[in-house]
Picture 1 (cartoon, chains in turn brown, cyan):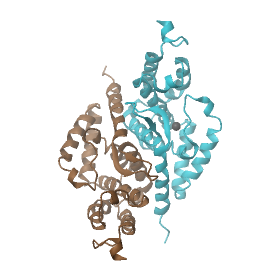
Picture 2 (tube, chains in turn blue, brown):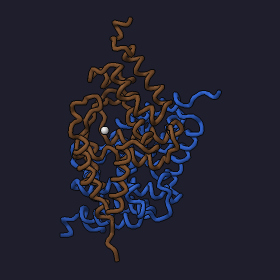
Picture 3 (cartoon, chains in turn orange, yellow):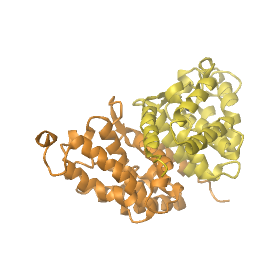
Picture 4 (cartoon, helix red, strand yellow):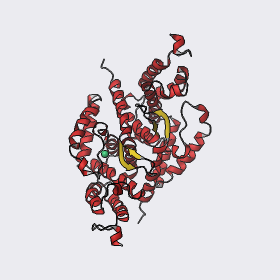
Length: 202
Length: 202
Ligand SMILES: [Ca+2]
């Protein structure tokens, strides 16, 4: 009789509780505190369910949802590196790779392999599913920034040009319709694209 | 040209951010604070992905995950009523029904109908998908209680008999294998089933 997979599965489910304590820079919309990576992942899964019709390619919603539910689990070991703080990014890819091996490796081998592969696919952002998942992961913080008087745009002192340079490729590749909205939001908050501040432009 | 569904969809996605501020009784495993309903929903969706092979019936994993991602959204209006505080349950079903109408009603009509129907199906707990989703929703707090020296069992002063009476039907109907684990955990923490305290039994 093969041994039950349950003990390993429950160990994994207990371990990932720690994602609820990984805090991101992005504020909640009511600005009461910053968002953690577990509730962020829940929110993104709902973005996928609600916005799937706006994906650039043909997407498999269950695969996109799975990617988004697991995409930040590596932060339990590797921490969150804020998108608009590029100097924090050095070495992060390798830290996350090791984290993926350890954390998904807590599961029975077939599930560990599935989650590892989904996570690598998300990171690579080449498949239609991964492009759409990545687009949502970049779009959601923009919506929060726009709704909180600038959020991390202001906190990290980014310009409209930097926002466009960093966010346009991943969002537009996964969903041109969402990039159109995101660009409008960024322009409304950060002013003209030529590097001038909104005050100078006024 | 039909008008875009995007504005309504984004309004809904902004509104549900408030689920991150609905706090449940259940503690995080490190006992640093209580869990909120958004991160709880994330955790349950992962329970569904990881534990699907233990479902009693044939389940559609995407439908189960959708149910779990949306099952607590009604708490934004209706609040969370703790499972082991029965005196808080009066009127909650009606409050949640109204909440489902308002909150899912923010979406374009086809999506609003889909989410409302999924939520009613979850609440009714009759289909195989809903039975499994409900079982996970009851099982996860038991795992947290067992891992935190009793958690809400101790806080709400429930007996082993009460835990079995309240938790066995929903968990066993959705997953006999998970009920076997849950029963063992409850017995290990709350002692014999005859109503005696562990001290009396020793
Ligand atoms: Ca609940």
